Length: 162
Length: 162
DNA sequence: CATGGTGAGTTTGGTTTTCAAACTAACGGC
DNA sequence: GCCGTTAGTTTGAAAACCAAACTCACCATG
Image 1 (cartoon, helix red, strand yellow):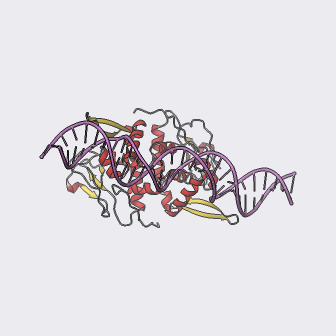
Image 2: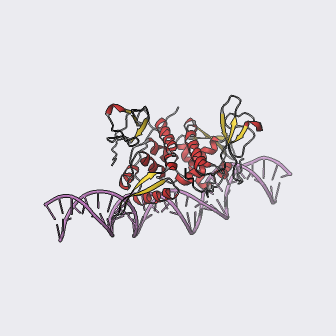
Image 3: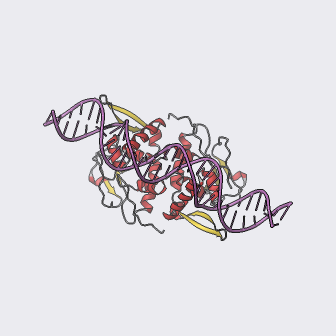
């Protein structure tokens, strides 16, 4: 539970929501968090799945690292390569991402899409990347098709995962 | 429940969260929603309480109106003056704002602040502007001090309400 | 009736961000 | 030696942002 120093001042009403937005309110930041929540940890796939320009993605990852949302783990030296993982504070942003998810789901798609859920053995439901991988990124259980419940159908559009 | 046409395409993974961010992800937008949730409906106080530059605020209010988050109500002709109110879709953004609020509260303030709650007679709790006004902007009940529960103390900093 | 104040913007001119696309660099495999 | 992969960096141009000053229509005051 490593808390950062506040050092955050916001213009206008002093409010935790405004302070949070100073940290994750720039473009792409929350989509990066979404990808990390979905179990995508490397630069190129994050760039593809968010659509962020590569230089922006670099900048966002650095600032998220600085603010303690993201942790960079080296997975090989020479050439140095890293994976990005959420810290505890980062994982705790899940409610924000899911609130955005829920609103979009309720208000922006008429009949249509939404999300895949993994009904885990223990009864929990985990949200899956919309193009489901082979195992649940949240609980790491292998996925059997019958565990996966499409809440609704997705309008056709290609996305890449790995 | 007037739904808007989707017409939203996002780069990368097609995802309701990304779509939502295309609508409320620009700077100041969610702070404007916060103010409206808090019962502040006019241009100048919204500008003060968010800290947004006036031209940005104009732009945000227009685009939030276009996307059906905000409704502009004329409250006097000559000179034309308006109040801004949330639509149903706009009010439904409350979970997003509160999720941001909660995260900031948990991770950005060490001992400190949070929020005032109004414990209404009916048992409901309403979140109040951090510098509480004379009556609850959500339910319009007059406020008696004993109804207002500061969740924690606020670090001193002036804010204006009206 | 001039002066000052309020509310809701608009204008201005300059700074900062953002962007797509091209480029670099260090490997690994064939 | 050449190709492909990964993780960036560089470039130059477009878009967004900013604070401060300004406008315009009113109202109140003296």
